Image (cartoon, rainbow, N blue to C red; front, side):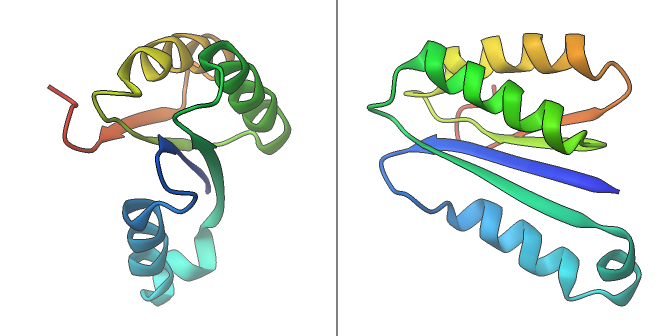
Length: 102
């Protein structure tokens, strides 16, 4: 199972993405089955460029599961990323997390 985790934040690293990956890799059944890739972006990055880079990365990785960390400042780029990723990977599980998923 290939898992792509992505975030656009004020920090280079996402604690949520690191925790999800760490939790999964701590369990032998998941460790043997899962391969992770994390896509990082800064809030200041151009939203259109973010979506383009993320979809290019995803096309290369071919994820089965896509996790997007959604904040108020990144939600519109995540909406567009979700739309494009769903078109590329109709069978992938896309999961939103973070404080602004509602």
